[in-house]
Image (cartoon, rainbow, N blue to C red; front, side, top):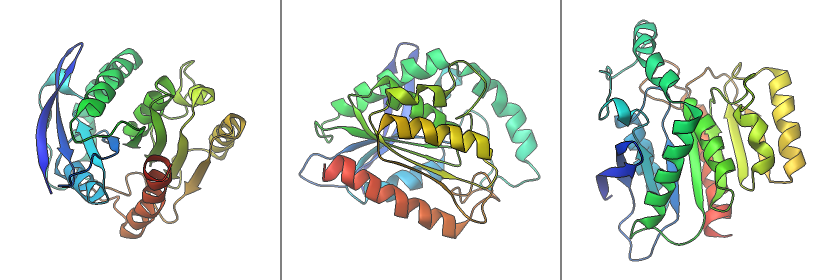
Length: 249
């Protein structure tokens, strides 16, 4: 499985990134994968490799590149509950500095870079996000409806907020098909209903599913939240979505 460490030119500097893709003669559909709040690390590189095995060029940027190369803060191999508060205390200033304006500028740069890679085909792309990354994926898809054909978000954070520019308020701009895999308690029933109604109004194919017996972060095997059955369900939802929108479109 070929992999690369890359530098993505942005308006604010160079974003370090990881890419994985199968060794094939043909050009591949591109997928932009946004990490969770813990950022680019071996866990996300492994997810990129696994997805790439199914025939995709997967690009994972360091969200916090303005503060340094990944890992921007020192992370343990396993992020247990006992150290999670201390880790988040270091991360929150980085998350708060990642404003909507920065997110949108970065999305432009990431998509431009992804679609320019020699291994990537000319068709639409998919965008995936975990935790915080689900909100970034939604912002990317709504800002680039002509390019993004699929969006998937897992244990999303910051997707439905009171802010005037909350990602869920941008749903009318969507043209991509959507799957959201929620942990129990990720969103209130009212928020789920509001989001589902907004998606219904767009006419795009979509599903919002609460994965049973899960807590926030269930896809990440380097955390105590990890749930192997929910991770399998995540692949069972994600792979058909990408196949029907990027491969057999």
